[in-house]
Length: 125
Image (tube, rainbow, N blue to C red; front, side):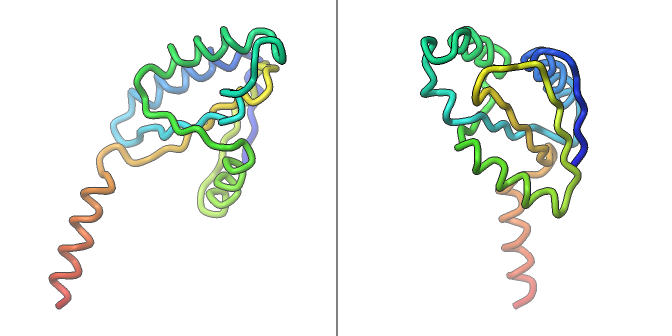
């Protein structure tokens, strides 16, 4: 796992990172946010409402999956056994404001993979 301290705000780093990923032809992001942040109120954490609104603007219509914070780390641990994990640390200080990006293949999908596997099974018979 590699950690880079960006010394920037989370949304600035996220916007830049998503822009670079979206410019790529071979990868696309799978986006995860902490489920807990949906339950944090402005009285508990001043600024959380503005953050959630701005996050929604940055992510647009991207499919975002909300997971419990700890379960994301379980996924990261499993992935780290096969892939390098890059953590971009930011100056964000709101609880459960983390955003996790998993890179997936942009030119292949689960449906195509399913058809391929079925064709391979059929050919083997």
